[in-house]
Image: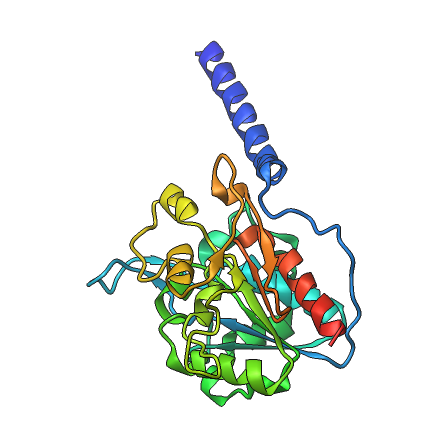
Length: 281
């Protein structure tokens, strides 16, 4: 019995050490890389982060499912990148009010420093529990408009006519730099150009790949970024890896107005590319 207990104790120690090492292992493979590029100062400029209001990962015809929403780092990373650059940052959502945040975001092996910071930040928490409704927001007053992703965005960003119209207006009636990561770029598929065509047609863009969706076995959401962006005429770009969960890619369109990132790993670079362009306006 003593040998059995010792054996179990050794196994528990090994399991604990492995668990503690897991965040570092995932990071070394490419999950949530640190940002090492140039930084920018934009005091007085304004950023708007837009999120989903959908909080259930449900299949067609169902109303129940696992909790989902915006992926934590896809709202917290750009929020603090913009804020730390001196920008005033507002947060809006499709319906306004409390934004659902995917609980998976906060699992110990994938939570980011920005997520940890956000959970202790009363101002941030107030903004996500009392988010602005996009209908009531004047998009043209912002220098940067960032569309956060997460599975919830597949249910309402690309389906919102209001969002499409406001993106179109911001593009033509202001100098706003517009973009997002992961499922966020779905919020651009209904935006129109001056001739009534799709704004993103012919433009270089990125978003979650079909490969990553299949690897995660969540292929039942209403819209998939790679598929929807290609259907809207965008020139889709992405990187790949053994699993696309560990890949990342950020692209700026030829006009220098749209910046889109592939997934949860692309937040920092996408936010900083947007700030670079906003600073040069």
